[in-house]
Structure formats: C-alpha cells, structure tokens
View (spheres, rainbow, N blue to C red):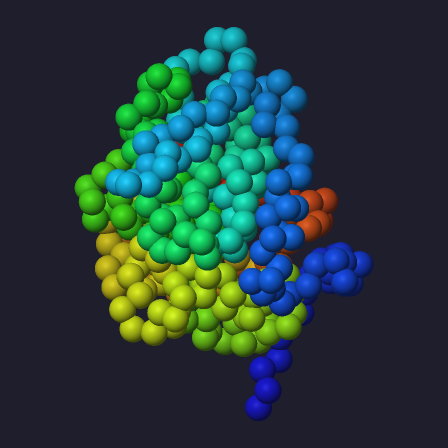
Amino acid sequence: MPLVPPPFDPELAAVLDSLQGVIEPGFTLADVPAARRSTLVELVDVTLDGAFEAEDRTAPGPEGAPGVPLLVCRPTAAGTPAPLPVIYHVHGGGLVAGTNRVGLTDPLVWARELGAVVVSVEYRLAPEHPHPAPVEDVYAGLLWTAEHAREIGGDPHRIVVAGASAGGGLTAALALLARDRRGPRPLGQLLMCPMLDDRNDTVSSRQMAGRGVWDRSANDTGWTALLGDRRGGPGVPPYAAPARATDLSGLPPAFLDVGSAETFRDEVVGYASRIWQAGGAAELHVWPGGCHGFDALAPQAPLSHAARTARLEWLRRLLAG
C-alpha cells in the first residue's frame, strides 16, 4: 500500500504552490554553490533596529583547525542587569550552507524579549569539511562562550543552545558532546525541526518524498556531504547523527518542534520519546500541517505565530526556573 502523505496546512499549501519552481524539495550537491550564494546575500539586521550592539569575535578552533567565527550581540538598553542569559545559536543550511547571520532574527527577538546576549557560531561546512569538523567547531564556540561569558555581559551558568534544521541537529549533538566531555552544561536545548538521523528511513521521510521543502533525497544529499559512504551504515557516531545515541540520559531540558508534514517528523518525535524514557525533560510540539521551515516561509500564518509563541514561552519558563 502506498504511503499517503499528511496534508499541509491550507495557508502553507498556498505558499508552497506559489513557490513552485523557486523552492524545490530535491537538493543535490550541484545546488550547493547557489545555496551558499543565497545565504551570503541574506540581509539580516544583527542589531534588530538598534536593540543590540554586534561584534565579530573568533574562538580558538579545534586542534589543528582555524579559528571559529562568532557573532556576539549584546543588548543596548540602559539598566539591563548583568550577567544576562546567553542564547548560543547554531545556524541551519543542510550542513552544506549558511553563516552565523542565517536564521538569527528569531534568537534576537527572544533575546530582546527576555534580556539576553546572543552568540551565533559559524562552523565549517560539508562536503569540504566532513564530520567531525562542524560539531567540533560548534563545541569550540561553546567553550569560548562559557569562558568569556562575563566579558560579554553573560552568565556562564545560563547558556541555552538553540538551532533549526541542520543547526538543530548540531545543537542536539553539542548537548551530547558537552555531557560526555564534561564540558559546559547548557541550561537547555531548543531544537527546531532538527536534522537528527542519517538513516533517513522513517515513515515520514518516505511519506514526504518529493514534497515540501526538504525531502528525502535532499536529506540524503546533506547527510552524504557530512558522512560520505558511511551514511546510513553501521558505526555512525551520535555526535554526527544524534538519533544514533543509545544513551539520552543526563541531557539539559529540551524543547523540540516539527511539522506533521515534513521529513523530520518521526525522528524528532522518536528523539523526544527517548529523552523521556531516559528520565529526561522534553517539551514536544508537532505542528499540524507544518512543512519544514514553515514559520520562515509563511511568517504571518497562525501556525507560525503559535510556533514562535511556544518557543518564547518555553525559554521564559526555563530562564525563570
């Protein structure tokens, strides 16, 4: 019996129809240069209309590797009490594209609402830099952030790690790596439609083949760029694909969300379930009819508003605890 895909939210379906020929679900390595060019020209006001002062810094890279670029955004509001919470942001881009300016608007909005510093990391990209380069860069950036937190007005004990899509997967991997290396312990991990499983063989990945924004073939492209011929085979480490982890105990509280009509649905639901089974704390949202990245594609849709509100309120509760 063929797999019937779940329906898209009507507003999102209309947006996807309007973008046919502009955004396609399939993505190959031949498309990487164009994806990188599009992220380079992405216009982001990293001050959020003057709410932040932004500064580029460089963290020491992993052994034998170059320094890791960081963008530090500090609130400009007078009288903001220090030290502030820190939102450590990991950008998306399918593991093959993106900079530390990509996807930064939401973390800046959270930081403006909650009174926080934002540090956004730029990691080396696959396929030129396969695993473990990306996650090691992300970890090096976290070490710098914890060590320099007070210098930038932040609290080293209140660092929340956050990322979307490939950045969400790297954020989950970062939490595992920090636990296992006894590194800085994040206060929480915010995983938005995270890319977690290189095996790419869930029901949702097969249901959404050829549909939406990032389908099964595109997912294969991203994971192959990171892992080469190891993708989907035995022995892939959890720091590359967090769904491979056999032990999800001892992790920071997690927020996970995903659309019901996207490739990553089942791996995200499974990851949240295994955090609970290991005795951990997780809040899971499956947005009905949501495609991958729906809140960016249709920011005015009620579903997008609900998702952004849920993330902000989770952060508010976490930081108040």
